Image 1 (tube, helix red, strand yellow):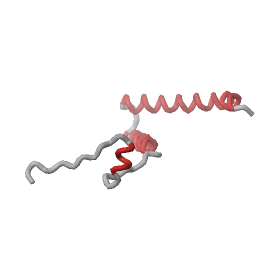
Image 2 (tube, one colour; image 1 turned 180 degrees about the vertical axis):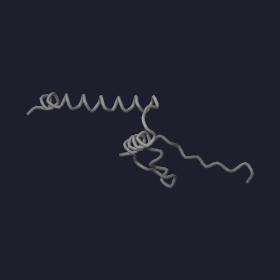
Image 3 (cartoon, helix red, strand yellow; image 1 turned 90 degrees about the vertical axis):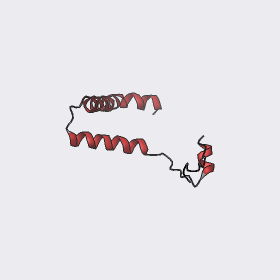
Image 4 (tube, one colour; image 1 turned 45 degrees about the horizontal axis):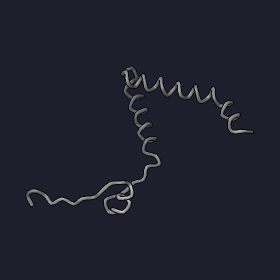
Length: 79
């Protein structure tokens, strides 16, 4: 079975999922969602946004440099 055919077969499901995501975003943004549901949805989205993100600490400047982040040590003004 070709990839295009499988995609076409799943199109109604994908459209329904997208519609549910959009309605949740509108409800969250408009403030019509109950507080507990809004907090739960926001937490779910935050978790999904963090997934797959690599954690890098200042102890690994080579990884930071590879990400385009330069580490600069600064002396305190009063020290």
